[in-house]
Image (cartoon, rainbow, N blue to C red; front, side, top):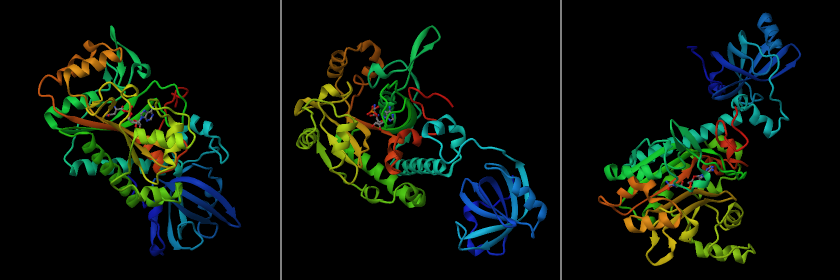
Length: 430
Ligand code: 4AD
């Protein structure tokens, strides 16, 4: 391994110090008898100067370098307020690992082209910043979950039944029968709470979702929690504490990356408990008062949620949805059987739903009835129904779409930018 200094660690205080850098040519320009290279590595960028006087051979080689050439450079640090980071490296040694004649991504590349060459696009500092923020959000979630006593579990991805409706299931051949790709780990997490009480998992979830919106992927990363002995109001508290911790920690550890994407941090700073809570009924009233055509009992789509988010400067909850627009496993509201004990968390600034959660139906007969009402076969859910026969307890849980959280935190225009290799109906490559 090369004993190198990271680009971002080259600081004015290191004036006079010799350093070795290894990375890729991000920008290049020639001025007089000097070649200015902006070198890029995982940490960021630094300016490197090759001059004819210092080392003529290195200077000649540097002149030939193309964008994204890989190089190892040695030189001396010089404080320079004009350099992008306040310091530059005056290079006297250059080892070219690979010179690149032409890099296909240029400044005016269209979003579609960038996705076609996503394997090359991933190296851009902008994409790297998104991935760093995503990693930090997950790190923060782990920190919070650990200190709050949740066990991480590893549920299956190959499954036999739907959680979130049959229409978005990916079906695949499994030897002489069929299997599906998991839409949600929820049902398996429910099984796990009987041994572990508070469990979580981070898995890919799959939805054969044909709708082309800025918030749908066919494969996304799903952070799911499930807990015994918690009702809807308990799990909502968990949701706001977890999301708040994730966002505040990202602000603490990734402030500069976040500021590259959004200047205004208000809504992120506002993400501290308690998040505002409104009922579905209130949400419908607000929408109607704003001229949106929606009746009680109708589901809210992205458009309706966008209008609703205008009312809030932080994430907020909508609870108490009508039963018939929500999934079969949600517990009926004992005070109003038209409704279920469900709550979604919506992100402000037009983003909308980032979490779907609920208290689960823990009564065997009611759950069978709900499965039948949804036109499904209780035999397909025999093991799941068993959980309501052997020590059933009140329990609740939720799922957070990681890319949707990242999209809001960084104000991205589409969730596809928040994942390494996005999968959508039209995109399976690279
Ligand atoms: O609301 P959903 O469908 O809920 C469930 O899957 C529950 N079984 C989760 C649980 O209770 N354990 O999905 C949960 C979240 C959504 O709020 C959204 O953030 C994200 O998953 N999500 C998607 N993200 C990107 N692309 C898609 N197609 C998504 N579908 C859901």
